[in-house]
Length: 588
Image (cartoon, rainbow, N blue to C red):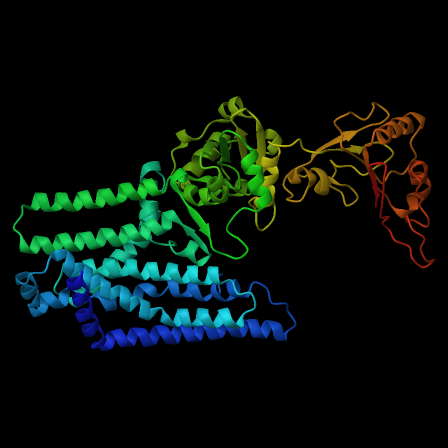
């Protein structure tokens, strides 16, 4: 260890005798200062304009305008300049022969050189640490966990860059070649995540190899064992390769044995990396103050109550506008949308079913000249470079599930082992995908019975199936509106009191602005429902006072001037609001 330390000290002396090392420190410090000044200035300007400051730590350091993401885009430029001479200088000057002849092992040389890089990287991120301490002092309730976890992610990233640079420096005596080689390897590691995404096993390997976005979770305040192990494995891999390269220069070994050793090291790293991606082996630590990267306690409680496994099956229609969401090349990104849930239920399976069928989409305008569904599907498959045989025909998909009631649009069916099912849809808004609210609502159907809401029909009430301005389709039944009752955990039905009693499983009865009064039979049936403790929700224009009073008077409430409370003569609200009980009766 002493020998390794001495080599590190000697290398640090050499580094700080170089103007390049000092130039990198100065440039990085200036960039930190300018970026922080701009970010802090935005907060001051917002406050001067009267805006309320919120989540200041995250606003300054994360997000698309934050300090940390900006640095990630430029860090790869610094390290090759730093590491290009670590071993290349020894080869070009001939001092490597002195190292070989001294009682120093190959591992001590490499680890000593790399230790100097670790120390230099600490000095490099010192401006970030200073800014972090300053924010911790000046920002009220600063989220220090988020801040310092982001700095940790940046440090691990540049340390991984350093290990790669050290290896490239160990295979050439030309410093410029070493720097260019490091840039090439970093570019390859950034690009490799897009290679082979259409093939399951290749997708898993290349996605794990990709260094792009590896520090993002750290910046967002989440430490995941997969990302942490990735950096440690990359560092260990390239340090080991550097030691093997140095050893090959000392010993005469066959080329087959040398390359076999390299291959075994790489395969071992890939195997360990692949194992680290298994959901059952992942560990997480959310260091943010508000636990923003973790499910809310309510959602966690729902997950705990679900026994057995879960399966999420996504049905993708090739002729739907949302075909791109679940293409084979997008499956890793799609998986991340449910990772918060899989974190608490790692045995969750995600499956994908591809088919083609008629859908009301914008693609119809792009597929002009195709007369049949088969022709449209074949053209789309050719455009996307996909095999048409991977898509089920309309007849085949209907044998599995009939999606015509869903318009053959993209949906996910969440299913328990016991056969219970719930549906997740895409919505017609900017966010499109279901948020935690909608996902947890769908899962909650597995653990509690969903409230059932019955809208009374007849008497010219507002209709939940019509889409006019007066009607309630958007609010009640529209399956593509995020906040409709259907997508917020309610079962919605219609009910005619003239035809039947209120069923026992109805939790809420809604009278939606009726224009004519109930007859005797309807009143009797409604009174029975109220008497057994049913919830009544009355929606009505103020002009319906005479029609509503016979219903509410029996509960001790009378509409006066269109409201449940006395109002001034000039007040003429178009909506009536109040809360009364048998269990509850709300009127609007």
